[in-house]
Length: 483
Image (cartoon, rainbow, N blue to C red; front, top):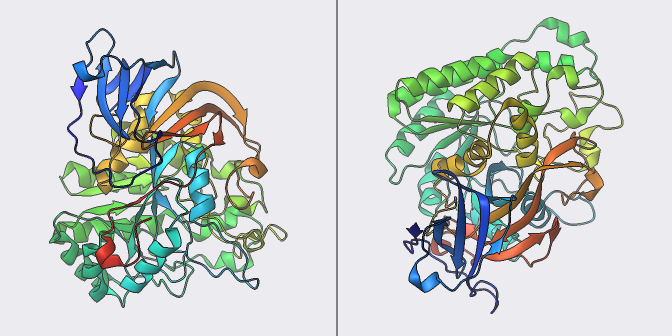
């Protein structure tokens, strides 16, 4: 039996009869950081108060709480998506097309069992590279959050001096690109900027990771000049594994020199897996993620002209996919994140099918954990692994609360691991119905979601108001009121 340590600061007040009430859920499959147990989870005032294994007595003060029996439905921790582009703030006048924002993005996350997302510093405008931009992002989030949201800052060649204030304000990490990001406001960092920033971050307490889009673009074969722009194979050839390998080699060398914590985002190739595995064996502070689309698809699956699949790094051949699965199972890759990067449909070049002109990003926020489970269970993976990849490890790496353990926020997912359903893009909560998962048959259904002890999703329907909160940000330094 475990009892709450009262460690979670429950600062946001909610309606009477919601967060204030005490309740309990029992399942034969409660997925905790220590493994799956038959247990009862009791919640008080939005916080997990106790996790009591079947047959053990509850704390005396909780003895009269009658649990709701979930039977064979699994009780999982709320998922954490540590790589999301919510694009707020953005111009909202009639001259600009609508982008995914905090409102639709966090609704989609919540419907998919995700109770915490961490937002990248682009593609919002302004990008989050200054204190003013951070304040504007916080203001844009006010009253719109259906999940908890953490924020990253960005590193560019000209904002190194801004990082200390951003870090003091509580951003959860610093993101950079080693190649063109696609936005002139967010240029790639050179080697000297990387070295200086990593030396600075190495001295921070508590430690904050540098997150890197790891591609160093080198010379390309001249054959690409005559390549069919509708060919995914041509797009794939334009971003070879060597780009990822060279960037990660450079980054790991800098980790050795500085001891800065490094997190490599959206790993897509086998060569990088080998580099990260070696770095971890040498005790270097390196972590890494991959994405559902690299685990679910291979280059052979992608028809010419279907730009819904365009992303960078690109989806590679099946040997890379299997290397990513192996790396997740052995812990070389720490977790899975969506890299949800949507755009207005007109920017996806759906009419021409031109992979080189289309926006590079895949919309998948609502389905990421279920896509992972669908393909994982075929490989003998358990719900413990799903919770590790989608909650426990991102919580540890990014220093956010997560997991079914006393003292943590009562962010919970009731999950049917066996139900099959078909993705209909126009039924998702994303702002635009453009996703390569449209029509895919997935296994595993989110039945209920609890956010801070309030039932927010039931039978796939959102039934609550926005009550998420910003994580890790000091409002007195970042500006604006708390969301």
